[in-house]
Length: 349
Image 1 (cartoon, rainbow, N blue to C red):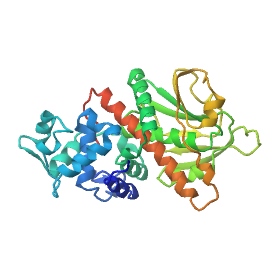
Image 2 (cartoon, helix red, strand yellow):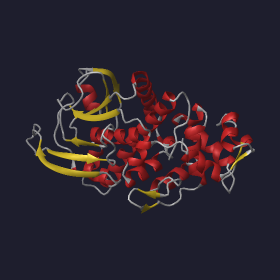
Image 3 (cartoon, rainbow, N blue to C red):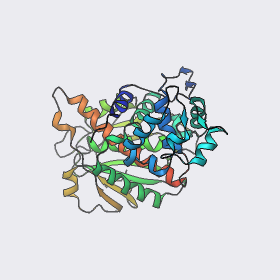
Image 4 (spheres, one colour):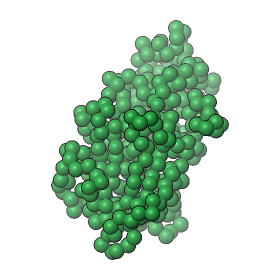
């Protein structure tokens, strides 16, 4: 049921924001507008609160507690947040007094920097930060799916070794591409660059231009390489794109880019064994009851935005699906990060 605090999330989502602890973007660009005390306090709880309070399934309750506890000047007291933060953690962050003021919150967030997050393109990180304030919009079915995926990732994660997730839909033109891209962004945001997301289909066609447009709208750099992949059954052109969501790191870090084109889920460019397969449409789910090589197969259906093509709401509905998939993958990676750290913080730098 929608909560009155959903207006907070809606307001955050409508603005392209950057963490207030960042002085400037790479290359000397000015910092983005201040996100405000409530958003920083929410990020504080996601980073330092109890595991229950930081869980996406408790996001609405956590926001309600936080909205009641936070003062106009951004000050938090232990009595106000004792439901969502351990007293010892509060005392450590408060630095000896009985209050967490706005500067304490900024300092705590700045002190737990995730290096890969700093490499994300400015528009991408801004949009993702807004999505982290909207976990209460994830429905119960997809929350349960996200928990199942998080369990598998935690059980199979080995720092420094790739761990693959493949998103499968019928045409590999819309949902699977959106899901894999937002999954890669979410992994980078939480410093889990070993997790690599891929896409595939059961009857590939071509990456839809509306998919490309909605990803470009949040700051991804997408270029046609000039290469062509084999055409689908209809014989349409199947161009190969380069998708980039972040700046290059050093030679030991995986690049924040991938080539994308429509292909079968078992294409040689995709992992062949030991991956998690997420079936993001009912058609692919029914057509592919067994995904060869998958260590985990999960049905994760979403409505195809294709049904809105050529109508007034087309762009909005593609953005809606992008963000549905984005917030779920952020919720998954957030929980993976906390659990891998043994419940310790993962910050918003």
